[in-house]
Length: 157
Image 1 (cartoon, rainbow, N blue to C red):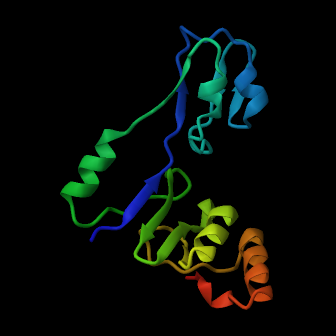
Image 2: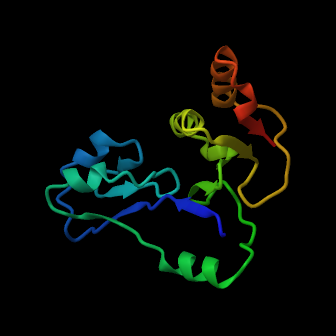
Image 3: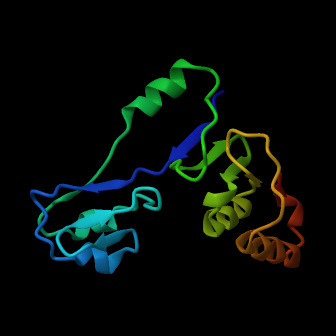
């Protein structure tokens, strides 16, 4: 069985429709206004859609990448990519939730552990590189799990 990979789907803005009301800028740190147009940082966008629902001119939309699905399911092995610019949030396998170190989500990790899954944090989802030191979020989750005697549920590789 192939693992399920969750990809963050960023948003884009249609400059023709945008009224520059800046509601999206006030709602999300991924948006910025440069004086003449609104821009979105697609690398940090989690694709939650709050901005889409709040846009009065319907100028914001999700960017769907069909090429990912064709490429992933046609090949047995996905190619390595750079985590700084990727938009993969996490990968789910039987009984495991695997995070990229830079996209580690404490809430999802705690929820997965409470549902009986192990959480694995790697340098990159598709890499065997080792993590040198734990980030602040990893340390906090590890301490929380230790308090509940569940520290074996979080593995940092």
